[in-house]
Image (tube, one colour):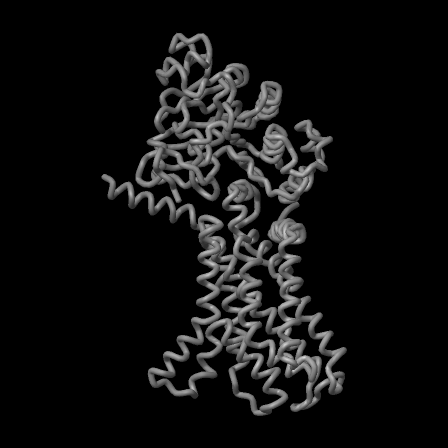
Length: 287
Length: 264
């Protein structure tokens, strides 16, 4: 008959079909490919190897990937709520957790296509065109390698997944498309700039620079940057690493992803009750 | 069990912005067709939303003692909400998969077998409503709530939509239908709940109410109880766009239920 997996799989299929039928996401992928390819061509790093390419892409990626992820996720849960279809879906034997999981999984698969493919294409371009022999697979530090770029790609997708999930939480909290855009933009600015500003402020306040590896991975962008320095750029140039604690950084990205999913699920599960509770308070004040 | 209603509301109140839209509504929903009628803004949509659990009451309790099965409740909101870009068959297939039902059989049942490959946005308003009804009855629910199933339709489609809805009630299914189409209420309803300003002004078997109030039909009953002669011209259909002013809150409906008061 039906079970939790049926619910997740059914919602997943519908959501993925929606993404596939939305031309805007294809445009987003093409735009991202043009932006990443253009930045690489302008920076020149791609012409010499994977690690120089990653150095060129690191900073723009910290802005481009969150933007793409938020675009993919900011309406993910709002659409059914705003149209009224969520009220219909909830009469079926599919739990809120299953619904959120199905939507998020589909949006994450979409992220792999919209973000992962352009970065992979650029990586292939580097492989084919870079002047030094980048076909050597690294067995020790100091050698450029496609594996280092694959690691970078994996970190890119982890960063994107965290932002997709956070954007989905925003879409569950938002009451309208306009407020979803506003909240998404706020989350984007806070995520991209907030962590660094807080870090700078703490350093300015007298905190030791030795605390950076511990505090850097607390935000998605900090965790991503730390991982790229630790496992991609640092492998080639600074064998001793120590940019960031790997477990802490990966845990941070996974944690932000789970946090977004939990907030989204809780909002959908308890939103009606909270709304009714607020109304009770209002009615109480009204006499 | 046999004496248990399919659903029961007990002293249910719902406010928006502190303004009551439903006030101390108590009623039992039994198998058969229960028509919820009343002027625009009287709380019909809110009542149905509370009945199916789409709106949480601010006071009172909603129970479903007789609603059983994997999908105990079916619901069609006032505004049919299906996602654009999908065909009628794909839309029903999504819901059917959740309850192990057959989407093609559901399309045939509602007379949309030939329209299965048309996209939802390409369907006429009436066909969308029929699709919504087909969705609501998937999984054989014990309680089906249909908010204005005949709203804004031509007479032929209005009759078809209403008939499709009420044929469900031949068995043990309880069908609650909000409508302004009092001629169809006369023809199909077993019981009537008449709302006025969020309160139940009259409720019970239609025949009994007609006898008690000395009314010849549902339209006259409406006039006697509500004390209005216009009231969106009930009986002439659900009016263009239906009870648009009565959309209420919850997950979806962005509208305003009481003038100047929104839930968002």
